[in-house]
Length: 255
Figure 1 (cartoon, rainbow, N blue to C red):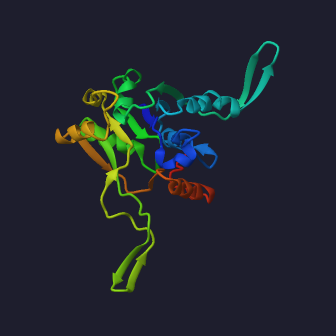
Figure 2 (figure 1 turned 90 degrees about the vertical axis):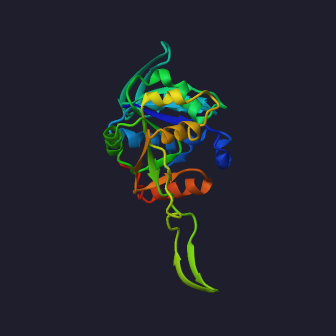
Figure 3 (figure 1 turned 45 degrees about the vertical axis):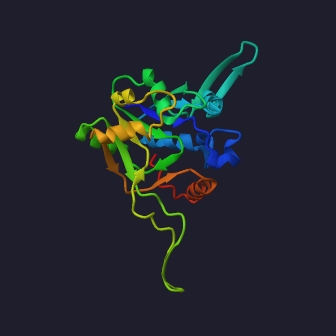
């Protein structure tokens, strides 16, 4: 199976960082979060990627064009212009970098890469979220129910401590409990190429009419992931992920 990664959005809530590079290129532990996401897939045997580019997509292109060079010993023949690679630590991945437009919505980006997907079911996720999800189990769940689409349902982590009050007295305090118990779309989809027929064009938001129509038609099932999940929506989220990585406690590091 291939993995499609949406990596073209503006990342406006992280504008302090995304003014110079796209959000998927913001680094956790010295590597872009996009690399972390790809490592999660590769750990489950998925090594062919289709990355949907948009805002500052050239930064992502330059990263991958130079990736092998930066991880290898090389001999340069300056006169002939030849480059000989020796030992390399680069992963054995196949990466398609597809320009899908700066202003294209999530559904439109997905539809624009149709020619790179073939006829098999594929994974799809966003370029800003990590999890310790079992992707093989997700794919097996999708095959078992036989519908067109599967999304991953997660309970988002809490952001603030919760107080249980009796008047002015604090009866209990819980540090950052899980939200209100409601599940949300955590990304990490498995999709049939037939879902692309439900996307009208560049202005289509994947999370709107396409998903709503799949749900109405009974073609959308949810795989419940109860482990670690974190989207990098804000600078606070980024710092949290960096802290987990720095202390060797990054649950998404399954490779």
